[in-house]
Length: 354
Picture (cartoon, rainbow, N blue to C red):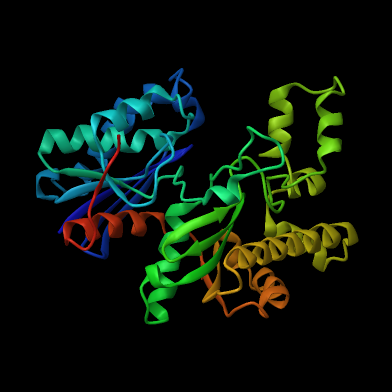
């Protein structure tokens, strides 16, 4: 069964073709900023991105009528449980309205929907970014009306969890994992029998600080910053997510560059790096407590998990909790294909967005 996978990002549209589990074609089409700046809103890019997908497929010799389905990255909709969802008009309308948030991933389902209708095939999204399976007790804060939110990396988190579960000879739904996705933003989650029951809001900069996120901060200091009169709301938000972490301390979001500075004897770079390692490890410990210490494994994934030093340094802190497994990189395209495949094979029932 052929599956077309579509993953729209900020500066590119990634597409891939899978024959069952095997990738037989992939391409990342880059979009220069000046090209995208013609469109006032993200939703205005729909036709442009769709034509890009069709042109790329045609040049590669594929005909959409030969495909079983399209699986697209899911964007901002109202919070839903994890799973594979049939793309419907309600979902498309919500994504294009941008009322739940504006991100290029909002274009994935609409592109899939239009192409699927045109060629009479199925369209799905899998584990969209707003997956919310958090138990209510984990959402409660010390201020009534303010709840913790799940905005993380569910697609990759669940994909690597299934991979490690397979290594252990178990189903994902039988395991308890703590998964740390280590990228520009860092999400650390407690996976309990197939559900993400607790996770930090990585998108907005909660949790450990990262190359670009500020992480948890002292409340009073943040209040003082907000009322200092020196910054706009947008500037504060940028400090928390985009210009925080390594960017704030060291002026770079590159782990490779930070480690290079450490090797050259930069003591401040070493202090900041060590602090990030410790904060990541503390949050892994928090999620182990959420699982009451019953942890089948700790999984390190994402781009920064390719650093042997970072993996080693985190492992030193957390190896007493459970075995540490490393699945470096991101597996979004594969996860999108496999989510659709589980439905096509009858291994999983598709869900309906309402």
